[in-house]
Each structure stands twice: as structure tokens, then as C-alpha cells.
Length: 214
Image 1 (cartoon, rainbow, N blue to C red):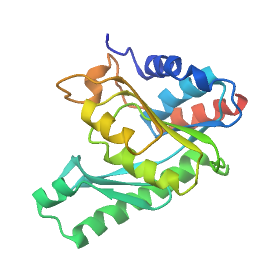
Image 2 (tube, rainbow, N blue to C red):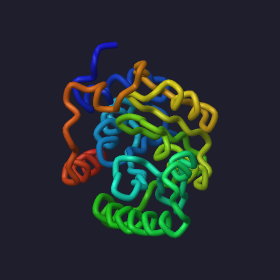
Image 3 (cartoon, helix red, strand yellow):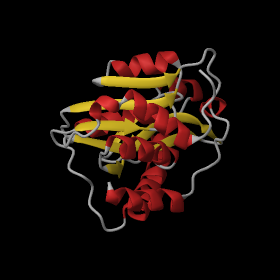
Image 4 (tube, helix red, strand yellow):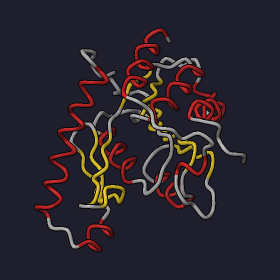
């Protein structure tokens, strides 16, 4: 498959794979900020579903922020990459410090993006959880486990790209997984895109406001 032009293109391509959910009043699309909200907006717009956010924060290793020790998500769920924790020899106290810092950022982002609006009720709904790509899958696993607390009827993970083994692992945790591109070897999410420029907080807020008209 040819490269994705940008996150908007990725969202439109994902929506084409999710058209069976179009026009249903039991479906909600959740975007993982920041980049995942751009993709999710296109999906929600195409299938006519409400859009909300579900915040996940990666727990970056000390002095190696890009290396995921694990992740936390809205609802207080924490997922650890045990192999990474063991390889780095991290103690529980070190993990607690990292998690506390990211929890504070998560709560700050929740207020920034959502404003005074309350989260959508996910109970009994089909929830399509969208991000702009997968790497280790730790962030998505944290989101999935946190989502299950809300007792949705069905969880669908939809991403434009990710490693084939990560996508396969997630299929065992949710009802459906849609991964458009699973390149081998997998280097990084950005390799699937022509334009993978950073998404701003202002763009996220703007898209959420615009989605109110869906």
C-alpha cells in the first residue's frame, strides 16, 4: 500500500474500512490525543458518529523518553512493558515517580481538551478507539483496559499502521482490530506517512468543537 499522505488521509482510509458502523446510534469514536484525534475526526465525520477523546500517556524511561516503560490512561489504568522494565533494572519507586508525573500531565490535558464538557457515556456502546499508529502497543493496551471499566458492548481498535505482531496481540484483547498497514520490517509510525508533522493542542480542541455538529 502506498504511503499515507497525512493523518486526514489516514482517517479517510480507515473510515472506508469501518463503513459498516455508519449511521448507527450505538457507536462512538474515541481519538487518542494528539495525532489520533485528527485521524478519529475523519472517521467520526465519515460514519456520522460522535467524537470524544481518550487520553493515554506513555511512561518514558529515565533519560530515554522515547523508550516506553509502559503507559497510563484515563481511568487510572497502568500497563508496564515488563521486558523494558527488567532490561533497565527499574525499581517500583522509579516507576512511581514516572507515573505520577505523567498522571499530572494526563489530568491537565483532560481539562485543556475537554473544557467543561463531560465524557460521553460509553456503557453498552460500540467504541471505535483510534490512534495515528501503533509501536509497542503499550499505550493502546492501557487504553483498552481502561475502556473496559466503562463496560462498552464492543471495542474496535482502528489504526492506520503498526507492526503485524502488535496488531495480532491486540486482536486477542478486543472485539475487532483494523490495521491498514503492517510493513515488514516496521521502523516507526512516521515511516508510513508522507507528512507526520506534530499536531497542536489548539488543533485538537478545534476538531472536538467542530465535531459537535456531527
